[in-house]
Length: 351
Ligand code: NAD
Ligand code: DAU
Image (cartoon, rainbow, N blue to C red):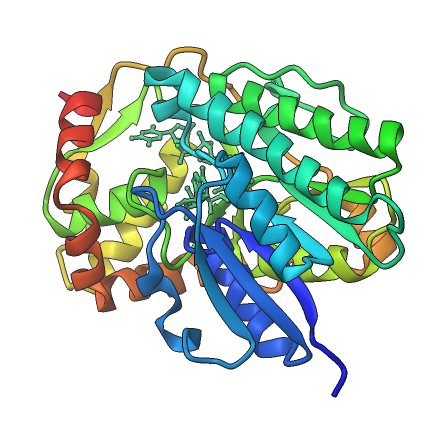
């Protein structure tokens, strides 16, 4: 029997990674999917309960900064394709502990690149290193314009600087060593299983518990929101049909000022919780702004749309409704991830 194609997905126990792992395990029985994750506060194997016993799936608990272990795993499992999502991903945490972001996002990516290069350098045919990045590497937009694939990098937070740095290393390994790669830079994701430190799940959890909704600054910051399953579909497409050494921007064609988004969320939550109209909006509290807060992100996703035929499959209202329903139906998940470390993080960040 032909051996299954060996694919490594890093960060597969996290928010986006778990959706990518599920899609690949279910869609490609001829691949063996290895999910490598160190299970930080953001990693949660509960996210993958439905596929954990599938014959084409293996979980590897490992840290991408552990060089000997990573090299050994590449040698043992001969990963032909890598989809690299493992990262420290929260901007506010990067402001409090920037070095942790350099370690995982820069050094960890370098260690994966070296392991991939050492394994395949004599023959890169049918091999691919796919690096998942963010639109934040482009810095901030003013009131107009969109990020394209040629927008110069101009990162403003330790998180985005670490992601920009890792993007540069991936590209440099392509130029210098001929390592085959693709990079995608995506806008803000939302959906099931997102850790409640990011805007949407944090505010859903606070509305459920009648806690204040801490809007940074004046709330007039803009983000471009994409449903996480649509991101996973785009990743599948780029992994199989993207061109070597190309970058693709992925976005939702869906810009929202934070305060307008929060009001829409409050409205949907009131309806779903059977609360009187306007109840949740009363929880909105303006708090101290995030240092270095980027004013606006918005993606021009026309390249991936024209070249690979990708576009989002749900509207924001639909995606948000599915997301709220998931959190309301999974309050035990929410309660479990918001105990322990979360409580001290929350206190430090918001009090
Ligand atoms: P997440 O924080 O939910 O998950 C990150 C995962 O990586 C966790 O499972 C964690 O345990 C794992 N991890 C962290 N450090 C590790 C290490 N040293 N070794 C092994 N595993 C480690 O993140 P996410 O929101 O799912 O983001 C995934 C990727 O997508 C990141 O690279 C992020 O930069 C990028 N991205 C995220 C968004 C977004 O809106 N969330 C948008 C664009 C791009
Ligand atoms: O653009 C892609 C990026 O989107 C990803 O690369 C990051 O991994 C991801 O975390 C996200 O970054 P943001 O900083 O945009 O997401 P966050 O959910 O933290 O914040 C969204 C907006 O909401 C931002 O303008 C800050 C604001 N905000 C956030 C929090 C947590 C608040 O006003 N209050 C809050 O408590």
